[in-house]
Length: 171
Image (cartoon, rainbow, N blue to C red; front, side, top):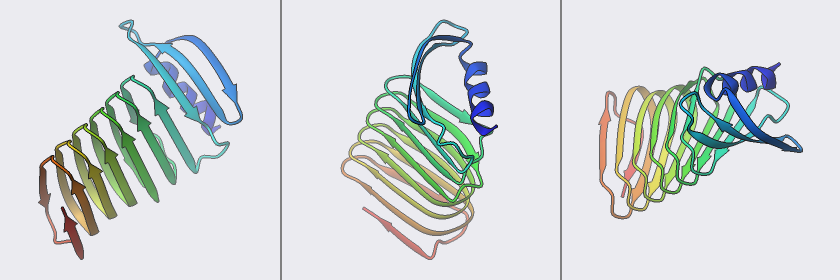
């Protein structure tokens, strides 16, 4: 059921599937949205509703209204935009694409970017860690958070917290 729901969400966003291949639990889709923009999606259905892994090369990714305990999103150069909640762990990784995230009621959240900006809105999360080489980080935390850990080599960090975390380490 979960795989069909997720596939249905993909078809809504990308009504034209140009090609697809499958290997194990991974399905690769060459798709086109209603405006004609092409994208390549790699989705790991995993067979359960507990895990979701989505990877794109240079396409923009948007994830909404999906529930899973463990979520992994990755992009080489496309923007990752999502609004999710209720997961135990979240891992987001991009090389040069930006990330716009709205996360609610989550456990451990990890964000990694080489040069893309991280625009993070978190509410009631246990832990947040981020690492970027040259990307800007805007972190807005409301509700509760226990731990924030972040590092940027040459980017800047803007942090807004509604409450004081138990532990906060920024470099």
